Image 1 (spheres, rainbow, N blue to C red):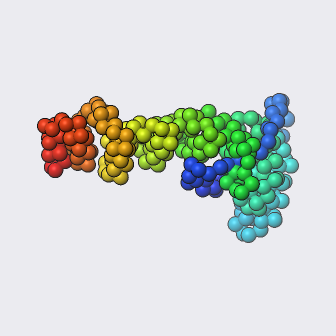
Image 2 (image 1 turned 90 degrees about the vertical axis):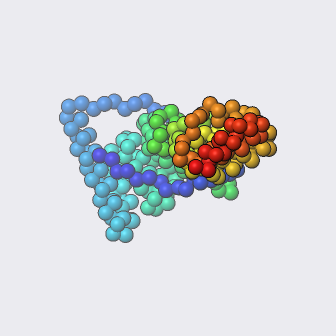
Image 3 (image 1 turned 120 degrees about the vertical axis):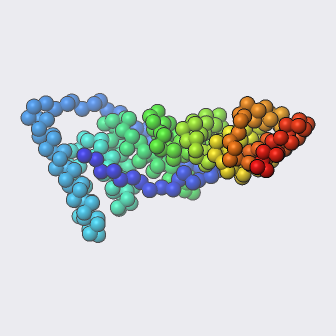
Length: 292
């Protein structure tokens, strides 16, 4: 039985130019012995009772009885003090309901001591550290710790958690690891092919990395698959103009034909690109298709 409660941070909206953070070393202890027989029955019963206390704490909060809810969380932890799931969930509840950062962090760290790969505890500590790093007292050590937590999180499936990759891109960029940030941005764009923000993030990083021509092609790739995308096409045109990279643009578009019939903007863009390459007949044909 799991109670799914998440920390609510709006960190994924942070621009690339902001710094982040998190705590110190995580101790890793040996895995506790597995109980058997009557011991297993007692453990199962205790676990059920512990989660019953967590459920009561939810009802207490709904009644506005936060103090009672905290007491019930503590009673749950006394019953099953070495459950990573319970510790991680208790950390989230205490953070959301009381703002007891120190206690919540200790619980999450204890969960990681028991299970170094516990995703709930990792996510909690990663988000907590990122929130700290956004503050005025953020420092390099805490930012690097946050990167470590997020990098462990992305070892699993992140297709339904784009915010994890988005935050790691920002952290790596802020740490000066532009190559690492670009690698994660590419993964984000691959995992979220219909997400325009993922495409924009990758294009921005390519631009900042001195690869404006590649940024233009990334934008074009999205525009081809997701009409209408006039804003992205305009951005692609600006990049191609600034770099005089129309040869690469035309070569890419040549390889992507035929274009969708219901996408006149891409036909118009292709026609304009062909004009710059002095392929007059093909340009006229493409521009005519744009008018249909």
